[in-house]
Image 1 (cartoon, rainbow, N blue to C red):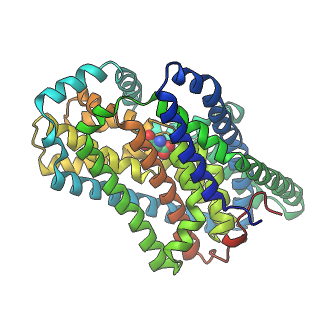
Image 2 (cartoon, rainbow, N blue to C red):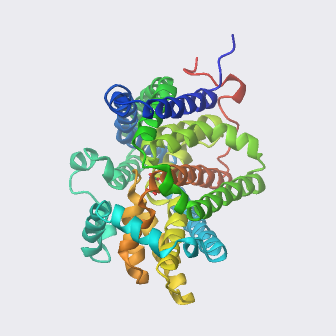
Length: 434
Ligand code: ASP
């Protein structure tokens, strides 16, 4: 019998997770059963994905950079990557601002609801504000300083330091290009083999993906706040979701226009990564799968994907920046503030920078939102307004973040002649590969 394609398996896992989650909320002790007996499997799944993120970046980036054989190629690719990343982010923020100004979701929040939300969630947001305060204290060049680790083992022990690992891997790759061929070859061969092993491990982990997302979603459903609160935020959520949908459409169109690959090809190739991004709310945890899909199913050469995607997972967050713009203006509207054009233009800049600074983990976008709010003079207490619905929106914006990275990798690959035929065809999309 033909095996069901991976994205269908994951989707079924997700739906079953939601159904089981809902069922268990209906009887006493159901929530605890899910937390004790189902949730841990979700955690194990995410842990195993995170586990291979650092070795994957090291192996694939060192291999990718050293394969370039020429440093000028690296700087051309680097410039293009960063340039396109910034352009897509600014487009995302602008779409968010346009929508929130037209739909005006904040005006639908009554004074009473606003007080209720602030009372309910005021305390929960303290953690976010504290984290943001630490970020704010640092000087303007701190972000640059943070990229250069003083100890590679120290950097590699914390997934939050992904940019530091990327920095080291690029440096190592450059070193390999510059030394004599006969010295470089054995080292390259080692990382080549190492990389293959990691890719195989991803295949193995993905066998568990349908079960992993089942556990994650079941736990999420039993732990989610009451549906009543969502209703007050329905227009806000609608605005964010519409913006995210427009971004996905934009990605498909631009991939189609530039690479001539159809939306169905693109979506079929990337969908398992999108579903995983949705289930885990973390671009970093999804990175191994994004890399595998983009390379094997979308035809992007490994030289490009190994460079563009890890950087994208950490700095390119179109969904997050769009959400930050909508959330900031929504909060201002709910507090009856009128934002001038100047302030809104300021939001474009801060939301772009804030999304670059957001870590690729659940809820990071909300921490950096505090900085966007402060810059625009919007009350931080407003964070409590959007807290209840943040997780579902986080799931959606992470999906957009990952799709954006995949899009840019295709554009960059096309621009330097590195977009080829996919290694795995969709019709034999079964795991593990033979
Ligand atoms: N969860 C997002 C990501 O990992 C970041 C955020 O917007 O919170 O891409």
